Length: 173
Image 1 (cartoon, rainbow, N blue to C red):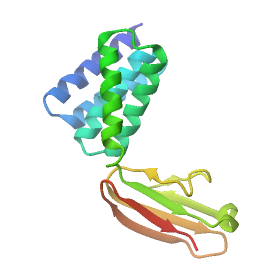
Image 2 (image 1 turned 60 degrees about the vertical axis):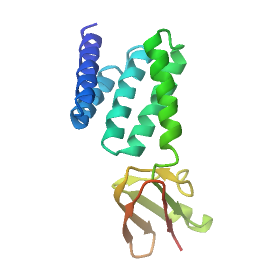
Image 3 (image 1 turned 120 degrees about the vertical axis):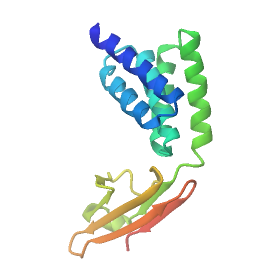
């Protein structure tokens, strides 16, 4: 349909922006294409996600790039990579995930089992689920703010600089 045509045009615009080194423009265009292609065939969605991955990597948004490349692998892999272009995107996305994985900063919040039910943790305004606590989670480099709220205690707020390849550990006691 016309939405699919617009999405392909938007991905093409993102590819052109990438070629010109305009990563922020590419991220905007390819992100818009991903939203337009949510109901499209998985290969088309995967191609737009890989455009997001390349743009994010160019901006130093390592976790965003790795997430988008992982979604590319999931979507193009699920569809069988029916053309040479999709097979190449799939191959390059796998390489990107391998290259980025050790470089992506992570945040690890450790909460004792006895406090899990009464603890709420936010990282950069995103609340973590109980399943995410105790797991090193990927975040883009830069300043991260962790807010820890334990029922009956004063909230704790900690800001740290996330650096590539480093896991910042926050411990609730």
